[in-house]
Length: 316
Image (cartoon, rainbow, N blue to C red):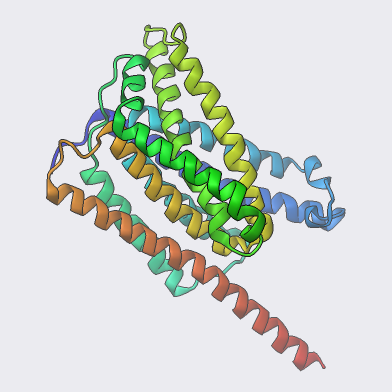
């Protein structure tokens, strides 16, 4: 096993901090929404009383801090290390919900948490070192190599077909349309995040990268891709059950992001077959844990509904 590089350690710490901030933000915001709903119109009914709740704003600040930490993590560590660790935010929110929202965690939820932790550990211990980049021009060189240009072209063509041909016909009935658009665009978004993050990191170290047009080009692409991704993610969440959207989106987004990073930054070029196999096993283990965690939400909901029905029958 290789020694973990200092950049990977920084990326790991930032990714874990991001998961803690984002995972806890869901719980804090929900507490704020519950307080607001008790004294005014609920957000689900079109109310905005939650904007007056300090707890909701604390949750929003926590989420923003998490996203900033996640953005910074990509500047230090490869996507194959940072992206799968997003599953840890699910563990944080599940554990906090158990203690602060009385949302009981099923035994399979505990197993899901353990699987995510085991898979994350395997990836962390065997993750490739971040490619050394001395200028944003080097990132531009990676992005304009034939391999990545082919991948990016395929993504653009597939997204175009999904938007103009399949969305009008199947968008409201087939989850894969909206989630596919989000995931494909998300993989390009992360590559732009890495480019801009590296440019900012190098600029802070005394090598200004904002004098190059490439930095501004990546920044504009990042903004455009983010808006497009959020638009179709909102459509998916508005049309389909969140407990179905979340795990499918996580699997597709993470898989495509890792694929894009391998092609663009050649993360696996200096790794042995055993290391690559271990990372893949770790990734699959995280996917299994993620599906278990989301499945137990349905189980918890069905148990709660059954208990509520039984209590009403007893009252009658």
